Every structure is written in structure tokens, then in C-alpha cells.
Length: 436
Image (cartoon, rainbow, N blue to C red; front, side, top):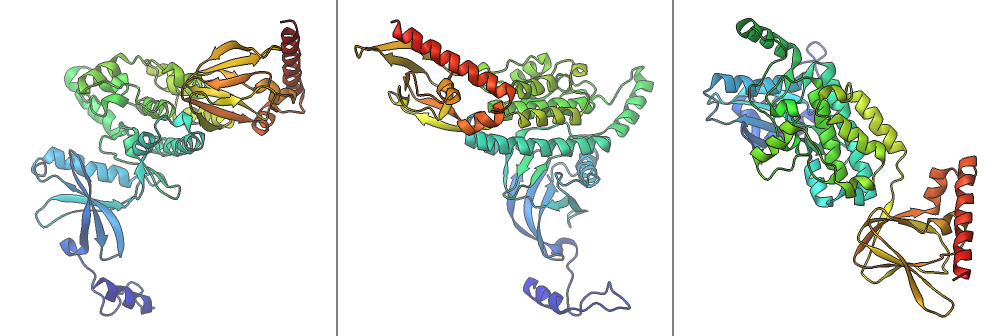
């Protein structure tokens, strides 16, 4: 039937008197006949998502079908339909559009939405490992992050907060598509205020709607969310900070071994930044993440756009470097060779040494993660004054002469100042060596 519909649609000319007329001989499926199930995509607590073929519009969609065991509970049905209706109000390029809401022959609710191809940001991070060691993909992830910020900022402009921002809820398509998914826990703030007012009349309290118990993902929850306290836009600011933290470090801010331990960490709201990862990243990016996740929400960014702008400024100042791996015992730089690039150690350890006039190898120092070497020869235009060898497997970021010139502004007063310092260090090093 599908092939016949396509053929007839291609040759159909609308009736000028009735432009909405159905092409002659074309059957438009309705109800249960409209969708052809193609397979399961995934399932969760509320139901199952299927890939379906819309035989009326001839497109593939995703259909979320409510779990039959929940379909007899009125409040669960309301919650399921509420997710569809909230998402349908958010017309934004980075939020998946909802197509239709309905029920099957058995009365089980469903809604259809755009079928998103790709992978989750969580899968991408797991595949890469430590994103900061892979500059090109790291930069791509940050571009994805900025689009998620746009989606959340738009939702906030419509008085909707997501409440469950995490890498597994971000879908990344093969052609630059980015979608913030799963609005099942979203709150409409005006609705929350009304419910809170009703509760205040009964209890003598106030504030936004209280969930009464934590709802969300413990490893990414804000302290107020983990405590079941009132939520607002700053809860999503925390979620975006946690998302950025995961991109920076490869793991969530509250990596508890189980749900209760993660919840306990989230309630405390104390985040210990991994020193190795943060030491190798621009300070502004790290500060943006930690500020967004401040325990006191009044110390966070005042809104999503303020956070986004801080991240954008940090990205502009970030020279995304290529990485290189050296096996134990291999030479990274060799004394006497021309210096065409410098290095920053990401992981592993190295030993720097020189050869004196008698041919004896002299160890100068050992270098660990975060150490920089080779910059003097690059800036001064001279040769390597020492040999640096890998003691174990070493991962380094490579800083080319071009990157240094672009970021130091060679030819400017500041660039001339740095180059002069490099010349003086090289001259001092040569005098010390002659005096040995």
C-alpha cells in the first residue's frame, strides 16, 4: 500500500475548488492502522519507545507508548500526557518536536515525535574516555553543550524547567543535530506556583511546588532537588554545570557507588574537582562549571545565558591541541634538534637530561602531568637544550609554533616580551652549562 500511495501522490494535482481534497484512490490510514511498528528503540519506567512508520505522512517517527500497568492510574496517565504537551509547546531546533498524541484500540496512551538518529552524549563520552585528552572531540562536545544551553534557555523563556539534564538525555546526530530529550520530569513554573499556593493555604507554607521526594538522576542532582525542596530555573543551571563537568572530566559530579550514596553526595553538594583533569584545562571553563554547581543556588549564574556566555569566552581562549602518545623509553625531544613545537604532559612521567662535555648523561629533573617543556627553543628559534624521555607511557598535548604565534600574538608588544624572556632563559641555560 505504501508504494501505491507514493506513486499516486507524485501525480496528483489538487483541485483548485477544494485544495484539501484527498488524491483519488489514496487511502489515508487512521487509528491503529496508521502506524507500522518497526522495532523497539528503548524503554523506561513510564513506557516503551518504538520506531514506527507513519503510513499517512510516509515518514519514520518515534512512538512512546505508556506502560499498560500504569495506564489504569489516572495520575500516571496525566503525567505521561503532560510530558507530551509540555514538549509540544517548546518549538526549538534543539528540542524534539511532538507530532501527535492519542490512544490505541486498548486505550493505552501514546504520543509520536521526530525519530532522532545518532548517539547520546553519554555514549560519546564513554567511547572517548577522558575528553580533554582528545582536543578535536572535546571542542565538538563543547559545541554540543552550547546548543543544549540554548534549548534550556528557550524552555525557561516559556516558564518550563527540565529537571533532569544529563549526558544520556542529550542526543547527537551525524549531521550536527543536537536534542535535549526526556521532558518527563519537567515543571511548568506557573503551574507549580499555583499548586504551591494551594498547598500554602492548607499548610501555612509557601514557595514553588515541592516534590516531597527526590526526582531525577542522583549523580547529576542539585542539592535542592536531592532534598525534595522547591525547584526553579537555577536547578537547571546546576544541571548544565554538571553536564559541563562531565564533559571536562569524563564522569559525573556525584559518582556514588549506589543510588543512596549518590543522593547523599548530592544533598551535601560538595564537589571535589579532579586535580589532574582541571589542571590541564582553561581556568575559566572549570570556574564556569563549579560556579554553576554552587551549593547555594544564589551563588550560581543568574541564568542559563550568563553561564553560556562564560563558556563561550573560555572556548575562544582555548587553543585546542592535538595529542600524541609516547611509549616507555622513547625520546620526545632530543638535545641539539631544532625546536618546532612544545609539549604539555597530560599523563605519565618524563625525565629531562643533558650530556656534558665528557659525554656523561646528567639528569636535570623529572616531569609529571601538567608540566611544560620544549617552549624555550620554539620561542627563541634555537635548538633543544635537553633531551626528554618517557619513563612510562606518556600522553602529551602538542603546542605547535603556529598555535603559540596565534595565542601569544607574536609581533605584538606582549609577544615580543615573551620571546625576550625565552632568549634570556636560553642564554642563562648555556652559561650554566659552560660553568659545569
